[in-house]
Image 1 (cartoon, helix red, strand yellow):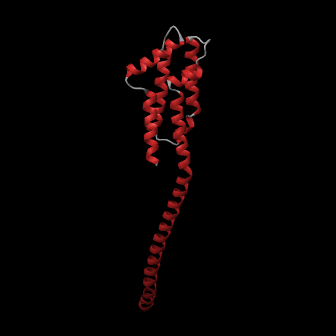
Image 2 (cartoon, helix red, strand yellow):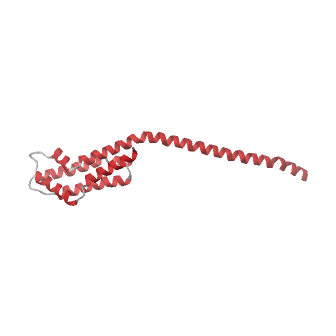
Image 3 (spheres, rainbow, N blue to C red):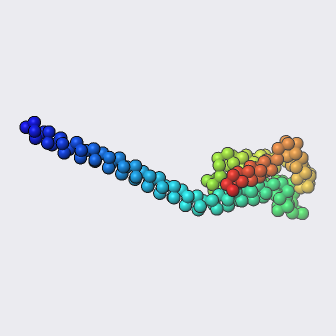
Length: 169
């Protein structure tokens, strides 16, 4: 009986050692293969996403240009328009531009999106609180308010978009 047990142990212990070694080596090999496949997938995804991210930065830069006071005035102001009509048209245009570009937030950092959103909010505040007897006075008063604030929200957002886009290149 003891001889049979000893014979069984002579064969099973080396077999268990070989099994354990093969299991360990195969596990390491498969983990390395998984990491390599994962890295290939990330590289391929990165190649596909980079153009979308750059396009998002371009669209946000265009958004900043389109909500600047000068561009809003140029696009929206007509000779027969009153101050209230211009103010309402500017508020609507800023909100529509923002809504049109909301999907870009998935391609940019959370901080940049907050800056863009704050820029939009500040521009809405400046336009809402603007006043004047003529549309030209209204535009001039908004420009004065922005310069008095010493922080042009559109210029700041434009700079933030450009800086973050440079990190990709």
